Length: 184
Image (cartoon, rainbow, N blue to C red):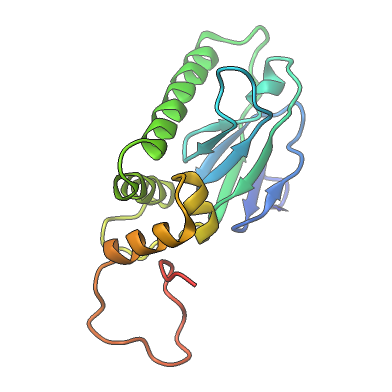
């Protein structure tokens, strides 16, 4: 985790855990994709994805303990949000409800339907997370994370990703960088 010159910005590498966000501050995802794990509570999923525009550490603004573990699935950038008035404003409450609904919709799409459909949805979320376009090479989460997110075996996720990857005209050169969707 890197704080850039006190500007209220955090830069995270893929796989990096955010062990502690400033307890009294909320953060906005500017770029990237984060996996947020929380203790399982009745009726709540044990994880959710944070994408650009999502707010993190909202619990602190509401006086609740922070009991989540946050991991960057791809390189990510967070920006501190300005202080929110107490009691929480209508704007904050509206934003939280919208964000919770979006997280639930994404979880449902990543856990229902065929594996190919779930992976296509995940690829769309990754494109959204990096501001990419359909043909662009994506900065992808590692295969074990992809498989866990879509509830599939790593081998199955690898086969589906291989089918979805655009065919390459020339074989990669020996020693060339490994493409993001290559399964190892």
